[in-house]
Image 1 (cartoon, rainbow, N blue to C red):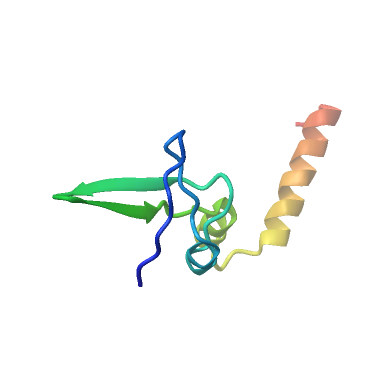
Image 2 (tube, one colour; image 1 turned 60 degrees about the vertical axis):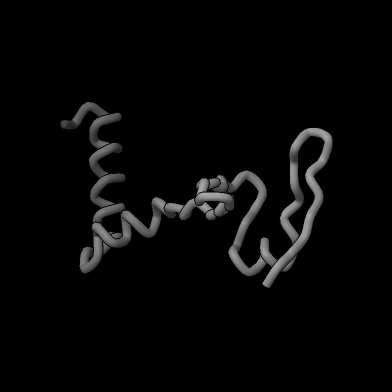
Length: 82
């Protein structure tokens, strides 16, 4: 599929809506440009969801139990019990 867009006087381009949707591109996302001979390859930088990373690390753990233990420890520290 080929899509044509113009370069503005500030050397900016608008990504067509169908491509933004297809590749999940949102305002503020980073785009990587790679030179290939006589072409420019544009790639969307992969987003990292910190919650998914933590869920992967804690897989099999009881997250609610860990949360309660952490909250209890914080309360004790604030009261000077630890």
